[in-house]
Amino acid sequence: MSSIRLTSLVKTSGCAAKLPPSDLHAVIDSLPVLSSPDLVEGFETADDALVWRVGENRVCVQTVDFFPPMVDDPYTFGQIAAANALSDVYAMGGEPSVCLNLMCFPACLTLDVMRRILLGGLDKAKEAGAVIAGGHTISDPTPKYGLCVTSFMNEDEVWSNRTALPGDAVVLTKALGVGIVNTAAKVDEAPEESVRQAQDSMTRLNRKARDIARKYRIHGATDVTGFSLSGHGSEVAAASGLTLKINTADLPVIDGALELARFGFLPEGRYANEEFLRDKVSFAENIKLEMRDLCFDPQTSGGLLLFMSPGDARSYVKEMDMDCCRIIGTTYKQGKYLMEYV
Amino acid sequence: MTEVDARGLSCPIPVVETKKALKAHPEGVCVLVDAKVCVENVSRFASAMGYNAKATEANGEWKIEISR
Image 1 (cartoon, each protein chain N blue to C red):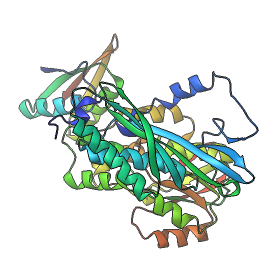
Image 2: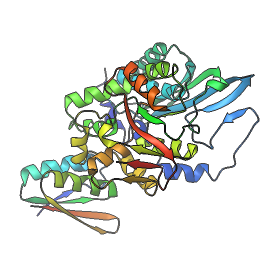
Image 3: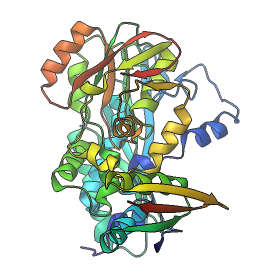
Image 4: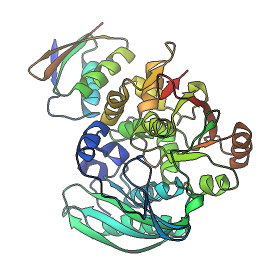
């Protein structure tokens, strides 16, 4: 085992390492859009994965995600990176079929570290019922790992972020605050229990959340990752012509995350997310600063954000039977803001 | 006032350096940083510890005075 801490080799980690959304959009929006009659979903709606028609009512759903480590244990990092990449397929309502590894690996680490990262990813893919069948590795001072994931499903069963309806309940399936806890953990300032909860959450597949949701009529779906609850919620709101009204008192939170936020253990992405959404998100005056931090906190391998009728949402949450899976708000026809926190 | 030079360090390290410095000098310290994020985070840490924090900018660098 290597004595080098994986997180000591990186500046930003997990989904917090995403390029600021404003920079990313500036570049993507300046490029021409390639289109094809077979491309069902592409860049335009900022959905979680591309959707490509392969036959009558049959589509291929494809996504790629990789990032630097947010934990020191290589096996755990591999599990988290894989769970995070697989999540984009679950957010489209699909089941992952086949994956490719993406690995950047520094010369200063032993090959056993690489083996354990890949094993973590392999075990998660296996748990997801998927196969890893290849990949690409390059030498890089900052380690990074993730997957390209492909899924096949019926076109009329794809969950979109454009079709949430006014009056829908908003359901979140994992607790928020992992970005904050990871930031504090990097310098050993996070309580053990907070770290345990964050790692359990990050390594957990969104498979159960997706499988149970398939029994209900899902109007819209995405997953919550680097752009925070506010960022990913806003994408659905913008694409569906809605405002999401979120009850902050109902948000599931990793124990200790709000206290760590109060002490300034905040990832850079938290500020970039707020900057990007400044005019699109509103907070009731009585909401504390650390709660705002949580709403902009970049999540790594976060939960699904599902939109369905309030009745379905109540049954869904009951069936999920996990404290971190909750109804967090409702939607209405788009008003002044995309997200309204009360 | 004791000065902590946290320029060139990325968060959360400046917060930890501030914490260490305040432990040694509870009366207050002055922290130098070169990123807006660090100004926010160090100031947040100071207020959570019951201190006042005042940041002044010059040429892309900030001086945060932390005092009771």
